[in-house]
Length: 215
Image (cartoon, rainbow, N blue to C red; front, top):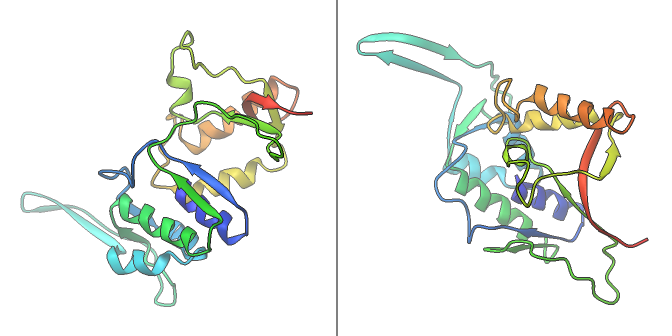
């Protein structure tokens, strides 16, 4: 997701830095089936052609137990549609294609591999006035409450008017989402937004921890 967002930002002319703990594209694959919607998003940045060429596009499948077919399905598709309902491809290829797309825009996108944020040090003339850290569903909340890095939000952004848009954006990452009651389900993300909002008197909110703010 990070490298795809990087490519999208670069296409919009936004200079940015991606900080990645791994020393390169992911090893193995957390996602193997890329949905049509994800292909469309990669198409916005020009990463769709290598994806379709390298991957295996499909619209249906069959499962057998011994000699008996136990499942047969076909997903809706039309010959006029640009992408197949699904394409099978390892995640590291998707990351590579998104990264290439970001690099093709010039020097707007930068990736620091094998890196972690240890400090954000202000420099004379720096335009960074606010540094916030955010929570990640199915990660942040699984840390023990007494952990040194436990998430205790103190900065909230009202997203009452944009929560539905956020949930629609999550639909583009169907392969990363999980069914309810997993915390990375569409329902849980919505419930969390309402819970965070209720703690500050709003219908929905995004919570952050303030690292630094220059007024």
